[in-house]
Length: 596
Image 1 (cartoon, rainbow, N blue to C red):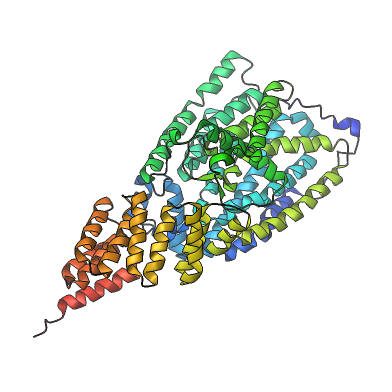
Image 2: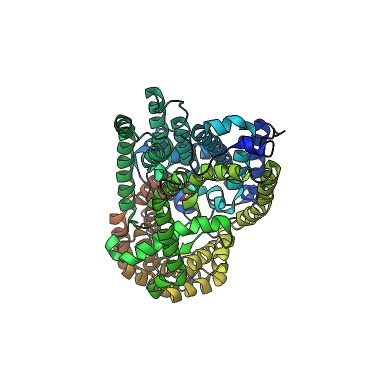
């Protein structure tokens, strides 16, 4: 079935479009592999950042290794609000070979990005070939060239930087790869309905994609859109029935992993009750997300790691109102002209459905949107873009179309290079967020936390104060300010800060542990032990809390009990050198003869 936007009659244009490109497909694929290596080269020298990398990798010992304990943990546990077993196994493999060298993780992520965008090029080409067989047959090499260059534009766009540069979301890439492979297989059949063998392969690809990350859940709806608007499978009742029935296993997998995603968010306590947000705030956020990616695709400036949600009257700002008008207008136009421009309608619907889980209808974080959310949804526009460029080639020469696309690649590549450098460290990451005008306390707290971790406490202090000025109840800033005072030797003030943080989150075991250590440091042994036991009742297997108790027991000369705690820490963190030294000291003290 052809895209009925207009007729691609190349014969009328003679050789204006029908030109034999001198570059082979293999050379174009080589370009797709080498150009992003150059554009995103700065990420290969980047480190980890304090934006989930600590919780996922640096402080998480469960994935380290490739034995049965690591594999079992990956399949039976959620972590940081996500269930993604294949992602953890992928991290385990990387850790086994490279330990915690961040450069290796960044190289792996970049390679996945290249493989995924090459698969995108093949997928888009197959869709265009399937939908416009006659036109494609007239000049396949020219269409291939336009497809590959358009994929290159997508590949080096600055909006891709976050997915490439952030180790914690590396699983976006293989999940998207297998999503695209499923679509590629679906459009691969020359007949209307895919064979049973092909369907099984599609089901398996979808399952693998979900096991990496649940961003691919909308696949069955996307395929139904293709059935209706592109492949014409809903023209006859029997064909429509078959198209729906063959998607039932896909819908079942989507439902299963959707429930697992909700369970993981609830386990992490990151699923915000919908009732806590007004209807307008959720509509405004969804509208902003829908408008954000098309606009930033055309104008990729002021990109950053965090776009924090506005508060109060800012929800009625002109920017959000304009986003609402854009979203409603685009949806209305695509619906009104769905018969005349089915390709446009199909593209908009696929984009909307793929982006829907991250539109903020169900809130799970404080971000308004994020660059990574558009990685998969914006791929929906590629087949239509290729088709429209082929139409443009009827009026201008093919060489001019290719030249224009290549000229676009250069400034995009420069912007992506610079954007990659902002992910070099936690400091550069959050300095960029603040420089772009973000007013969130999270950015101030995170840059202060990085300075504190690097022994620059005096430089960190103003950032914590600024974060608390923006939000006096910000828990992490209260906790970090307490750590600042603790490092400066002002333990009573540190205890007051920890107590204030606990007023906002009484069940926070980490802050309870900090408060317990403060009490013990001040000599208030009874309060310290009570607080530490309270923390351990909440998280009995937390290695930090066990270390705190072991140190307290050792200080009280209870070396046997301290050794048990340090041994348990080593079971949880086999590579924890501090726990190993503490255990050795406790055992040595235990064997030492008592003084006469």
